[in-house]
Length: 278
Image (cartoon, rainbow, N blue to C red; front, side, top):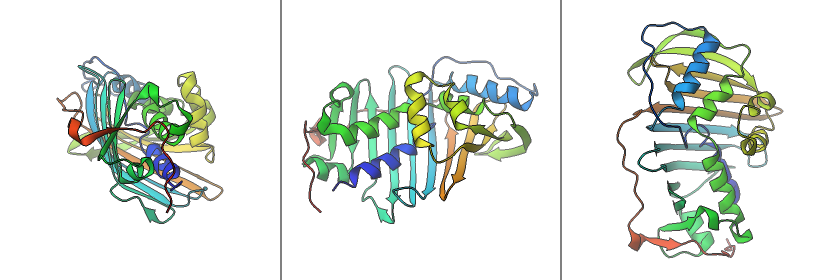
């Protein structure tokens, strides 16, 4: 049952751009037209001012040690009254195998609740949900789980759009309607090494590792009249490895409900879960 780690790692990779955001609000730009590079900068700023949102995502990857894989799911995020994220991965496949039941993770404060048939089997759990304090997942026995959580929480919406600001070739390519909203479509590329430098130091190496097989990442950004990112795609390929990520954002600053699962359905994540055979 050591396939837990690659399954969750692949799932976490899909969470780029969808697990966090900043706070406060800003006035819309109205009919002001911006140069492409300036528009992406403005979108990065606006992304950091969102207090809640929902997103649908799809990740397809090929090559590498895990072979072909696909992730499909959704995310609900809020920063007020407290930081919380609800991540549902309905489809997780890798190397031709489907992870039964997908996975779901709820982050509230410093606690994470995870629902996964695979993780429950790995941990020998008898409850559908497992919980743990983020600070407690430092024991060596939680290495696989820790890796998943670290990656899942690592990127935020503002940080991801900020990566796009390092592009030297971004251009506007037209207007399109996304989710019923009129947007301007921007396209370009960014170099992974240079883009990593705009992130917090703790996030730089993990980004480089995740995109180690891709030197340059192609992106497309669809921004609405308030410069909010309604859709982002990232893609890249090199030496037989490829990735394609699509995220659709909606419900900016709308009320959301993110709550811990019922107590009777929750068990504690074992301190040192023993690998299961199979």
